[in-house]
Length: 197
Image (cartoon, rainbow, N blue to C red; front, side, top):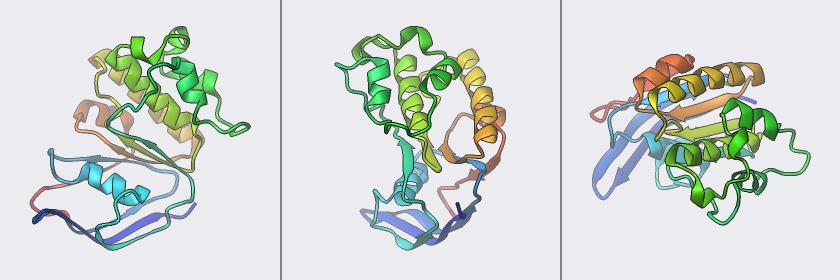
């Protein structure tokens, strides 16, 4: 996979400039965490990279045809079990080891619970597991640690760091949680609402 290259990216919402002349290369096989204050364009950046937002100026190149995207909302199907929610998006023979990922995210004991019965933290980890199991060359994660208590968050962040290194995955992760960012390692892109370039 080549680098994902953003050049002179600008995005305006109702007269408010959210991103301005942003230039960044997301290197292949590298975890990059995007941080910054609320409203400075972190989720917008993921939506532009994923192709969900095409109302921007500038150019994006190097995005592969298959992307895994964990949204800010969990988007689970409440009548399905935790495991069924993951299996729903995983292609047969896709290569993802669901059991390994459930173990890593400390979800194995809860795999048969309906999504509607999961706590907020469990539902968040289920959404994360679903993205990891999709097994795409580019992984976009929007606030994956929301709803997790401190000890669990740090354990998961350290496990993810090791997992991404082992997989040589290209990951663009949005988080406002500086403790989690430090535990993850990798590169950090700090967006400033006043000036993105």
